[in-house]
Image (cartoon, rainbow, N blue to C red; front, side, top):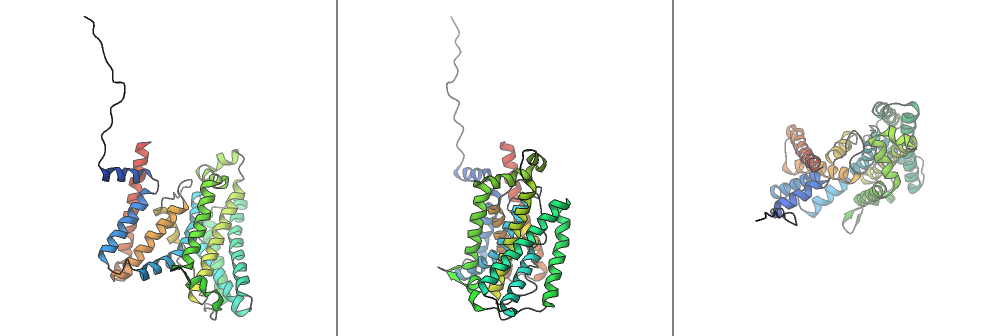
Length: 338
């Protein structure tokens, strides 16, 4: 009698996971899964705890507030993917806003021409940062701290610390207007995010940014124009910061010297929450803006819940840690799958 060994022709079918676990696994495979999960959780809890959170008026306020910090976050996220940082973006936005106010009010220049000149000024300031960093081989963190002082000092010299009032109402639509119920600054943010996301994902320039952020020396050996790309990234960050400053002037109707004071650490925190690595080469502007949404929701929740100012930093920090924890779990899952 002969013994025959049979082998299964097809591998056994793995057991199907429950629907909730399948949804969680699919979410965790997405690089943005952690920040999206945190965003959904915070949004759901906020809706349950406050009846005023999910109202049209409150959503409009959040969208308008997100636009300004979101624009700066997009520029900062590009630099962080590149392995750089710019701590002068807030001062650049403030300088652009003050310059616009002076050109429109004191010089009597056409408001729209003034806005164009302010955007050019912000781009030039960012480009100057990039040129100094690449040509002098300085660390971006150190140099931009100094440049923040230069730009901030220029604001104080020009204004003596006094706001510029009487901004023409011609540009107020940019900061206060609505299109089909959506704030104009938020539409500007979405447009800029769409353009930057397309460049980062669909063009060689975007791939070059990721390559330089991952390994600048290898990118240089491959023939990439590393310094030129760095300068372009700093110029883009300056442009977006100036755009945020101009929109803020249109929103307030005055050019305040304090514009941009809070646009330094918040964009960095938003980018980190959104999955952008501080070491470079990882993340996306979309994730960074989602991180800015989380921070905006945190600030809105604190106001709606009437939380004591003494506890605001504790609550904000705790929710930020929760968001980072979700993102960390997603990265651990992806590493284990690899």
